Image (cartoon, rainbow, N blue to C red):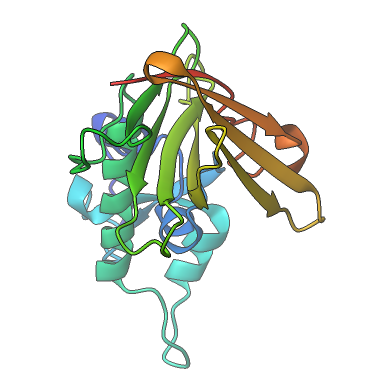
Length: 225
C-alpha cells in the first residue's frame, strides 16, 4: 500500500516551526545552522501525519534515527520530541524583534545589569547581563548571554547565534571575552559600557572563527531597557 503523503499545510508548519534547523543538532550541540533535511515520522509509522509525530531532521540524523538497533542505545522518541520543543521555543523567542529570557531580579543600582537591545534597522540582537551572587570577594562577575540573528529577510529564515560569557567588568567599564575556534583562531568580544545605559559591542575575527554561527555577530550599539 502506498504511503500516505503528508498534507501540504502540515509540511509547511513543520518547516516553518523549525526554520529548517535540525532539532537533534540543536538538542545535542546547540547547532542552529540551516540544514538539508527531511521530515521524520518519530513513531516510525509513515501514515501517522499528525504534526505532533513529525520533526525536521538533517539527513545524517534522519538516517541515524531510522537506523536504531538493539546493539546500542539510540535516540528515543521522547528525547527527540524534547529537542524539537526546545528548538521551537527558542525560535519563537528569537524570531521577534525583542527577545525575552525571563525576568531579571537585579538591584536597580547595579550599573551594568539588565537587558540590552541592539539599535538600528538590521538584524535584531539582545544581550542580558546578570550579576553572579557567588563572585569572588572584591571581583564583580556577570553572566552575559545573548541571541542574535543574521539574514532576517531570507525566505528560509535567519541563522541564530548565541552568546554566553562569565566575565568581570574592568574599572573602565569594559568586558573582554576571548575564545578559540578549532583552528585556533582567537575570537575576541569586547563590551564597552557607555553613559546613559548604552552598550557598545565589538568583535575581532568573528567572520573567521564562526564563534556565534555562520555570519552571525553581536557587533553594534545597544540600549538598556
